[in-house]
Length: 217
Image 1 (spheres, rainbow, N blue to C red):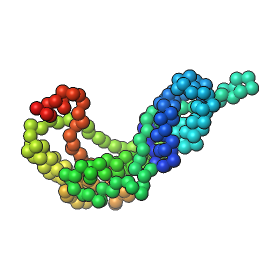
Image 2 (tube, one colour):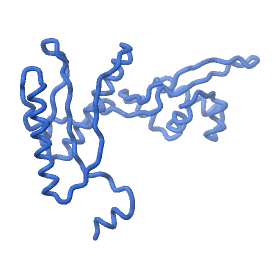
Image 3 (cartoon, helix red, strand yellow):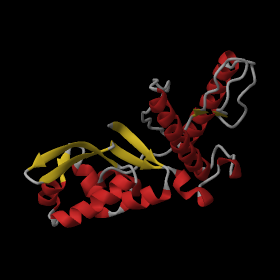
């Protein structure tokens, strides 16, 4: 079972978004049969079997074992992953394109970059799994509080300069990153493997009422 599976097929995405099937996928983090699931989700076994067949057809659940019980064969299945993310590939014709914005202060560009990251990482993870190789990746996640918008702007400017300096230092060929803060990925150049670099900064979501009240003070 994968930790996270990226769904690229539109039909599979549609199947996974059905509320009942989402619940079944959640329950199948541990192997179970249609009979066991029927009790957990409160549906007739036949109805659960219908949903299981749809999920299995789209590769979202897999057979673990078959158990003989008299004249009946009980199929035990589990979800193919602990959690799922739907890739923009599933909506290819309307997926966001980072090239449409190319503005480092644009929230829409940030969102387009995030969507591209999901798409590319899904492909890379699938490829690494098929090749039975570990995928080299790195990420930093944290929070920072600014005293003012001016401090935030100054921080973003210094961060951009620092990242560009690092890219100039380590990039094979010495090509600077420029103002995009994103290096292209793809085929190797001169034996060196290209890597995608994305640096983002955005306000944290409100987590409680007190934060909202503070904003209104």
